[in-house]
Structures are given as structure tokens and as C-alpha cells.
Image (tube, rainbow, N blue to C red; front, side, top):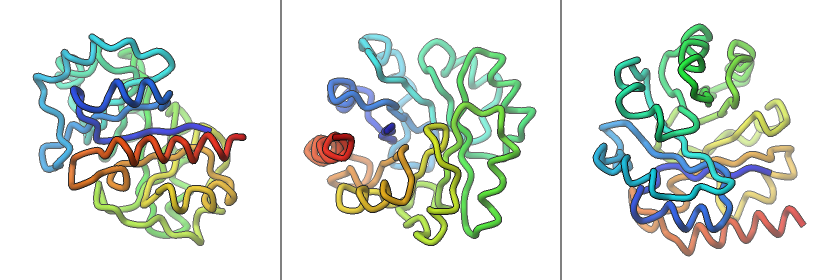
Length: 202
């Protein structure tokens, strides 16, 4: 079972997530987002001993220049939320980054788009909300491919993760449901969620 916590603050949240063995720590590069990372804070990330965690840069149609300046050397993965096609995924992987490609799901036929990105390291099935906490349609969860290459985002919480796990999902991506208020992670909520995941594992 894999966990990704997205929209983290490089100063406040990273050590906690590493200590809790969160698999993927996501940092948002999107100016319209309340979780947008301060570019000056990127250098702080190099001070952490990541142990088993990976750092993920969450982006929308990043340019080569942007990737070179801000992403390479500081992040293990880049998450793509834009119009990137399969060829673009290949180009970015050649730079030495692993790729998470996000696919927005509105209806069942959208799920098949994942087949276009078989070169991505991870495919994230997301709601169309782009950071607004839309619930992923329950009737579509059982239609998703199963495996740790496939992650699900969309209103996952401590309260419903057990039911979603029973539907076959074992890679969970969370952001707003782990916040005390918009853009600010609640450390108790993160701890409680990881505790719940560890109970499910056992």
C-alpha cells in the first residue's frame, strides 16, 4: 500500500511525513494554488534525509527551462497535470526524473486514457477539480486498473479509506482532507490517517 501526501510546506511538514514513512511527498508548483511552493524554499529540501520517502514536484505543462532550474536535483518524481502527451513523458524521463501522469476522470471512458501513458512510472486517477476536493465517483473506482502503479485522488480520508481499499485501491493520494484550513496541513490528521493505513496493512 502506498501513500502520497500533496501540497506540503517544505519547512513545516516534511520531517513529520518522513518519520511516518509516507511514500511520496508532493510539493505544488501552480501559482493559482493556495499550496503553491515558495521557490526559495526548494533549497531547504536538500537538508532532509528522505529515507524511504520520495519528493514529487506537482506541475502543469512545465517547460524544459523550468524543469532544469527548479526540479532537477531536488525531486525524484515530477507529476504532470497538463496536456502532456506520451512523447513529452519520454522527454522528461530522459532528464532523469520519474513521472507521475495525472488523468482527470469525469466518466468511465476517461479511464482508458491511462493506456496512452504506459511509459509513465505512476498514473494518478484524479477528479476534474484541480485541488478542489471533488469526490471521485464511487461507481468508477472498481473500473480502475489495480496495482501500485495506479494511484487514486479525490476526497480520500481516514473515514472512507477502508471502503476504498476494499474496492481494490492500494495507492492513495491526499491533500485537502489532511488540512486544518485551506493550504495548511494538520499534523494530527496526517498521523491519524497513517495510523489507519497501518491498521489496514495488518
